Image 1 (cartoon, helix red, strand yellow):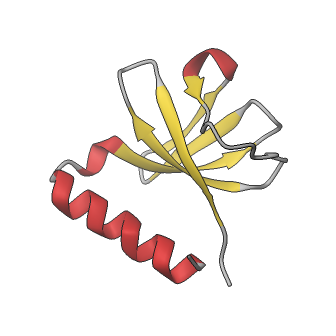
Image 2: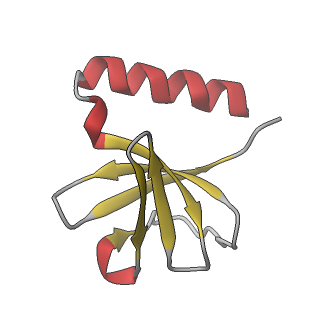
Length: 84
């Protein structure tokens, strides 16, 4: 799946879910820390705030990820996204 496909998937998920506040983009600050970004600002997330995908993904600083807000304190990293 290319970057455009992930963008389309992201838009589709938001449309189906009907709740835009559940999906966010983030930028990895390290292997286990992430900065959630949206129109309201940024929120730092650390290892205690995040669930990681089961597949082995070597996150590094600057990687863009798609986040799902599970609870007020927990987020799931759904996947790493790239632009091509």
